Image (cartoon, rainbow, N blue to C red; front, side):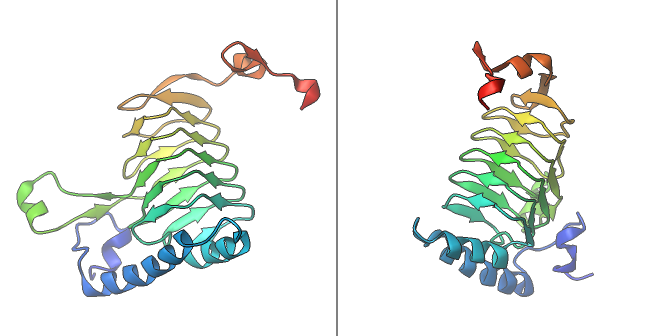
Length: 203
């Protein structure tokens, strides 16, 4: 197995391999074009995302600037995904994001890791592990998701959280490391923020 084949295997590999670098540079050229678009060019942005990403559903919007190791080449977005400013996708392997998920500003989703043993880092080795985010999630501002984690459907990750382990569906999870705070339930059907009641008739 060569270095390029190891991108998606969780095995140690050398990311500076010429074959990998050639592909990565091609992807980064498209990312540069995307970040250079004007607010008045939504159609061009949408067309570029379809070229850049492995998969991107209808109605997705990513606010530039977008930072990405492979320009989204290994990223799979469902439909109606929204990402605010400064999303960083360390997409050395696959990132999956489900339909209707919202991503706040300054979020980092990282698939790449480096060995703890210093002599292996000195050799420039790394490994990659996919990240999966379910449907209808809200990833709060400044959150960091580390390699190999899964976030279940309908879950909220609090602002500034560092997700180091899997988080189940239907919960609010916060902190560093990120832990489940509570289930999303009946209280959330009555209040949307602090003591602000949901006016269901007007929605």
